[in-house]
Length: 100
Length: 398
Image 1 (cartoon, chains in turn green, brown):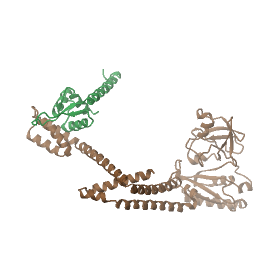
Image 2 (image 1 turned 60 degrees about the vertical axis):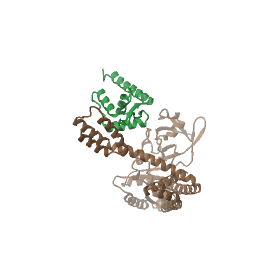
Image 3 (image 1 turned 120 degrees about the vertical axis):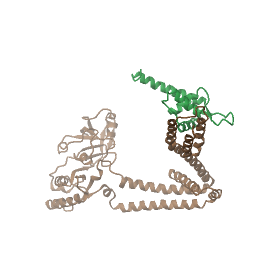
Image 4 (image 1 turned 45 degrees about the horizontal axis):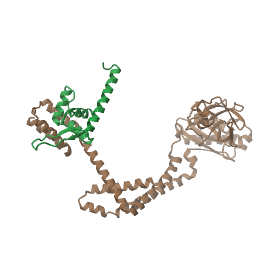
């Protein structure tokens, strides 16, 4: 899973969100270390949709032009697996004394 | 977002594939519709850079997806077409199959005999030295003189098969082995080394030398403790003679032909009688010296042969020596006929292909319908090409 895909899934855990909100949430959560641009975001969303990890929400009104995305059960499972993998990698770094 | 930023992002978005444009516009809408939509210029520039950076990847994504969709659809159409016309399919696949089979058979012969390089380092520098006289082959005294006088060859080696098939006593039963007598110089000529132990030395290759033997990897594995422990120094009984194993050759080594089990020293006498010089059954192989060539080596061999005829007229009256490449040695005068056969088979394959092309052209009704409903010439070409690929693949698989 790419870093962008992981961060997008993480943004959608608390509920459906639209593109710009995902960008802002990611930026705030990583203290601006990771900033998703519009093209990076859209390509990642496309891949996650194709893999069935997120789903597009139906639009609530015609006035609302923004598309909203929600995480699917498969997306939650994939996110959990990836988080466990990262945690394991981090604990290996701690064991080697790279991190304290 | 201000108007300039919006225009700039819109222009960059326009460069994307149409499928991406809609989605990107959606993301940009979500930015422009947000309450804090006044983005700082630095942020706008960064977004522009993101759009530029992802542009090639987006086009690659779209092209890869389109191509795989189109390919699958064409393959399906091609298979359906062949199933609908079983007579055409059987004829085309059978014709191509026959052509490919004949070409493959002849090519495998040409490759194995002519084109495949020798499995030795610097194989192009190896030459067979063919000696003919009253009998094919050369005697050891003549070989020793050739080796001593030659300057064109870096090293020469002689070898011969033992007169009778050797019998090896395993302890439980007897097996027949295929062996070879060779000079100590053979590995130097071929550029190979024993994988375990060593080849026999010049001292061991002298008359009255100790009985030593070099065995093949398969012999060692089959009869000497499964090759688990190095068999160096072990004694093996061949034709009731005990030989001490001094080396094991690599698994991929077998000279002069496949499935040789062992090599023992030739132990020839250089100063033999007139009769010993006259009759010999040795074969020779040599490695040309750096900077030398087959032509110069051949001229030198002619000179040495003339000298040997003068010095030993009774024994060498009919001696002829020629230097041949492996191809010339194996093929002799068959080479032109082999190439002619290869050309004939290639021609046969071309005729088979043209027959299939005519058959394919005769079933263009379906394609005309496609053309009539607006298919491009490129799409039609793709359909025909895919069908040809399927026919060729199935024909070759036969």
